[in-house]
Each structure stands twice: as structure tokens, then as C-alpha cells.
Length: 418
Image 1 (tube, rainbow, N blue to C red):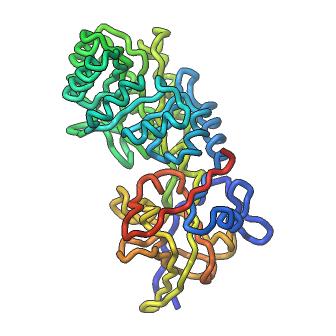
Image 2 (cartoon, one colour):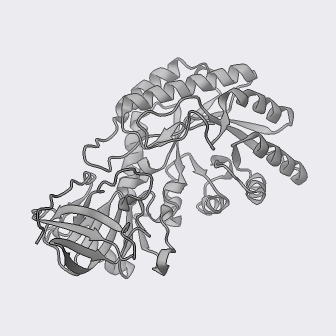
Image 3 (cartoon, helix red, strand yellow):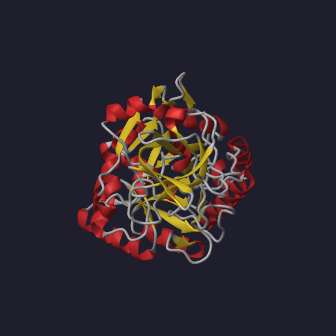
């Protein structure tokens, strides 16, 4: 039935998931099929806040006390999840006017929200300044617009500068710094911009330095964080003013693919403590520091459940057709930033932990060959009606997928424990 095709490996299923006595996947202690029934149908995202809380606690224990944790809500902006996160972290990082409204509705204080992202519209700048949110300025032109809007409003704006550093985060999935970038102000031009902000009487809130994301190598992360703190020291010395806050970015990745191993946050925290001990800003007693994280906090706490609606054969290979697809889970289909498509961890939810014996392609319901959620994966024998569980669905799933493509309905979402 499966020809001579060899199975392709999957990434590791995250810790925290188990099966009940009938081999049904449990999410937050609840049966996957019961969650589907509660939600009304598949496709369904389920987010377990207990896993998120445990991840935050683990990270806090590893990081130096000087480091606050901020949540980048682009990873997952479900309103119930945001309300939970507002009580767990010290701030939200947003990237649009829509996210500003979501962050405020979730109960996060305006002065704990920072707004980054290139190409901010004037109406977005106006809303942020009115609300008292910190704008992470991406260019001199954006600074001029923000200052002009604030003057018209009669408001003293909260302004920080996003820095495009001369270095990037080695091994990161997405490099946000180093060389010509759409993000931030080149490091050598930052001091002049800060002086302009100060001379205008604005409330300078500090620096945002983000070099890359989705890195698993603790040594590279530590090296980048040391360079980030040194750059912040250098900018402060050139300006002759102390930044109230230095956002050192994030970068902590999660293991999606075969061979990936979790980042050693204990090592990251130890080295970050050493770097802080050598930082002039960290010793002044007034500058605060924050690490901005999205996927690291929420990715492993999410599962995407989709139902097999048909099983078909083609040239000796088996295709299990599901009612979900890349319109909900673009990243799992391999169409969100990866060069070579690799399999996310997945399982047959109602045969969780059962011996794997069949090679099958998990294909979505969209009319495009790109819609493949599992490529030649080895699974227990599946039947029509079975539930497929795709893990690491808590970040960049519903929030980063083309939900309107081909007119299929949006996925349901459940937040457990919020």
C-alpha cells in the first residue's frame, strides 16, 4: 500500500502530553475528542495555559532577577490567552494598531506596552501616543511624524528607539539585525536620533535591540546578548543619557524538527548574569531590562486538531485528507520561512502512543499542492474520522496563516485554564 517510499522523520512531541487508558490524547488533562465536542467541531486549536505558566516559571528561575519577561503578542493574540498572559508577564510587545486594541482590551497597562514594527501609519501612531504606549521608533522619519502628532495632540510621547545592530543572532531562524534591514535605525545613527528626541522634550523610554529569533544554541544566544548589552552601554555613553529600559530582544527557540534539542536556558541565564555584571547600565541601578519572547512562551502549549475525512491511494502511496490545512497552520505546511520542508511533530490523537506501522501523507483540504501537513510520516493505521494532532501549534498558527484562503471557515480555538 505504501510502495517503496521511506518514512520521513518528525520533530519531537513536546513534554506535557500523554494518553488515557484508551489511547486518547490528553490536553490539559482533558480528552482530545471531548475538547472537540465542547468546541463544536474540528479544526480546533487548543491552548493549555498550565503549560504556559510552567514555561514562564522555568524561565524566570533561570534568568537573572534584573530581566523582566515581555510577551510578543504576534505569536498568539487570542483574547482569552492575552488576558491570561497579562497577569503573567511584565509587558506586551505589539506590532500594529489592531494588536494595540487587543493588548488594551486584555488589561495590560498602557505604560507596559511597546509598539514596534516598520511602516506604522499615522492613525496607529496617534492611537499609541494618545494611549500612552511606548513607540519603538524604526526610523528618523517615523520619529518626525510621531513628534509632530504628539505636538498637535498636546501630549508628551513615550518614545524608544529600535536599533539595527551590526551583528545578528547566529543560527537564528529569522535574522532581524546585521546589515541592511527594514527594521530599526542603524546603530551609528541612533545617538543623534536620541538627542533629537530628548531636545524635543519627549519622554525617552530607552532602546529596543532585536538581533534574531528561533535560535536553539545557548552559546550563540549568550554571545548575542553580551553584544547587545555592550551596544546599549556604548549608545548611552555617546548620548550622555541613561535609558530607562533596554529590551534585549528574545531569540529563544523551540524544537520543531528532527535533531532539534531544547535551548539550555540555564546556560543562557548564567551567561546573561555574567554579561550584566560587566554592563555599566546594569550597574547604574536605574535602567531596567526586558527579554521579549513570543513562541518560546506559547508554542509548545498549543495543539491543532483536525479530522480525517477521506483516505485515498495514489501511485501506491496513502493520503489521509483532513478538514484543516495551511489556512490555519501555514508553518506546519512548511510555507512560513523554512527553505526545506520538514515535518512538525504530529500524531493520531485517538491512537496516541500506539505503534507506528503505516507511511501516510497528511493532506489538507485546500486546492493547492502546498497544503500538506505531514509528508510521508510513520503513524498507526488511520481511519476516516480519526483525529490528527499537530503539536507546537500555540505560536504562529491561527495568527500567521491565510485564514481567508479559498473561503474555508476559521479554526475554532479553546483556551484551557484561562
